[in-house]
Structures are given as structure tokens and as C-alpha cells.
Length: 228
Ligand SMILES: Nc1ncnc2c1ncn2[C@@H]1O[C@H](COP(=O)(O)OP(=O)(O)O)[C@@H](O)[C@H]1O
Ligand SMILES: [Mg+2]
Image (tube, rainbow, N blue to C red; front, top):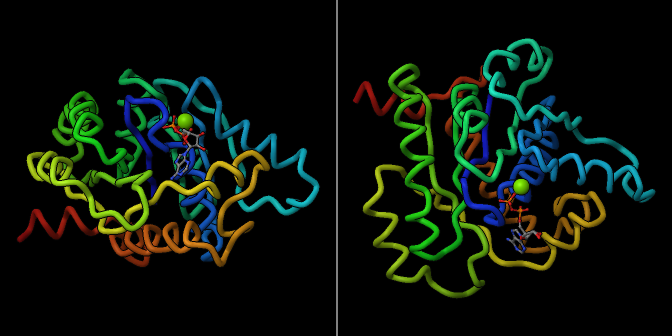
């Protein structure tokens, strides 16, 4: 199972979701590796904050930095011994993003609930379409992040999402202080605030992700769609 969180826009929640989803997948008993493909190294900073925080002793998954154009070539050897690899992508469309897509079964594109955020994904969608000429099975979906709790998604963003060729995860992540607070301490929401809504949202998203894979960790969603 290889997942990548990508969007050329910074601040949309790639690192937040990559860390928390990797943690949720690891807690389900999967050996999980988080790859930081952002040259700014935010996921590595999360791991460093974790080491400095004595409350967070166990390491749920290793984090390694690999912001190179060769991720897809290096991944098979790095991924040996892991059930799941999660890639936290860079804040731009470049060769690293293209390599991350080629290394992935599923690309998750976090977007904030604004049509501007959806429109800003054109370049990453184009990269996904190019990658699909070589690997048609690559699945890619939007995930709405930083929604204001108890509000419906605005009509404008719903329209913007419908006009795009990619599906949208049904689970949405709200704007919640717990995501920022836990990150400062190098923790995940499942670990620090397991009974809060932030944790439930991450579990729902993770369940939806897992349903796209079979028992052997192979992506089944796109193959099924192509055969239909
Ligand atoms: N759902 C959320 N609720 C509250 N804060 C969030 C949420 N998602 C992200 N953030 C905050 O927004 C900032 C940018 O998020 P980050 O995951 O670093 O984005 P990216 O990796 O796409 O640049 C961080 O300070 C993070 O704590
Ligand atoms: Mg980031």
C-alpha cells in the first residue's frame, strides 16, 4: 500500500494528514513507513518534536527524508518489510511530485473548502494523468480539509469538485485546534486526543482509504472501475 499526499499549494494539510493517517494505519497493525518528500522536512520536524517530547516514547512508525526525483526507483528497496508507505509531498509541482505519483497506488489531494483551492490543483491533476499513461491503476482523490464544523460544504466548492475528473472522499476533516496542538508535540490525534472529533475524522478517512485496497495491499478501486 503506497499512498501520497500531494498538492502544489502549501498549507492545505498534506503533512497533517500524512502523519495522522500513517499513525492510524500503523495502529491497525500495519508496519508503516512515512517518507518526507518535502525538502522543508515538516514530517521530519514532527519526528524531532516527538523525540523531544518525553510523553511520546514509542515510535509508531519511522520517518525518513527522501526528496528526490528517484522516489519511485528507491521505494521498492526502502519499502521492503513494510505493509504501508505514506509519502508527504512537496509544496510544488516538480520532478519530486511526479516521482511520488509514480511510486503510489493512491494519491490524496487535500483541499480546503474553497473553489480557489480546487482550481489550484490543475497542475497536479495533469501530472496524475501523465503518470496514468504508464500506470493506469493509480487512484487519486480529493480530501476536504479544514472544513468549518457543522457547516455544509459551500455550493461553490461542491460545483468546483463536480467539474473535476477525480472523486472526493466522503470523510471530511474539519478545522480543529487539536491538529495543530498535537503536531507541536510530535503526537497524533489518535494518540493524544482519541475521544475527540479530530480522531474520529482521521479514523473515518483511514477506513475509507483501506476499503480501496485488498488484503494483500493491492489497490482494487481503479481496476474494478476499469473493468466495469
Ligand atoms: N484540519 C486542520 N485543523 C486545524 N489546523 C490544521 C488542519 N490541517 C492543517 N492545519 C494547520 O495548518 C498548517 C498547514 O498544515 P500542513 O499540514 O503543514 O500543510 P502542508 O503540508 O500542505 O503545507 C499547520 O499549521 C497545521 O497545523
Ligand atoms: Mg507539508
